[in-house]
Length: 126
Image (cartoon, rainbow, N blue to C red):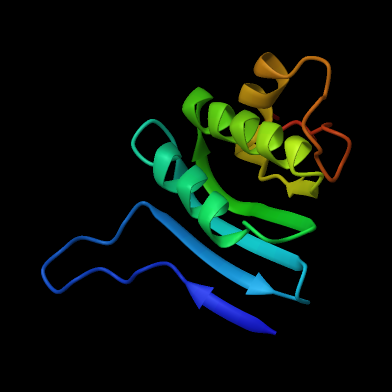
């Protein structure tokens, strides 16, 4: 298994609010783990990373269970990834974090994104 991490911060820089790690499980099966915020400030970095790291895969898993904040820019990035995967005939799946539920429920009412739990979230409200 090959693993690569996103670039570490340079001395004196603050840590990025988005952390990305790639694991090639086979030559065509890749898992990208996402941690932190996927929002207006990081959505482009997120989608660029996915396109760059998963360019030659046939099976893509986005492990987003460690995402702590997700907004509609993050959803837009997922929609772009979905479009590219469909055109390239790549099977893909999202393992979502609970914080993604409200945005996904509003922006994807027909459950078109390939969520590992069918797009259904347990309520995070008590």
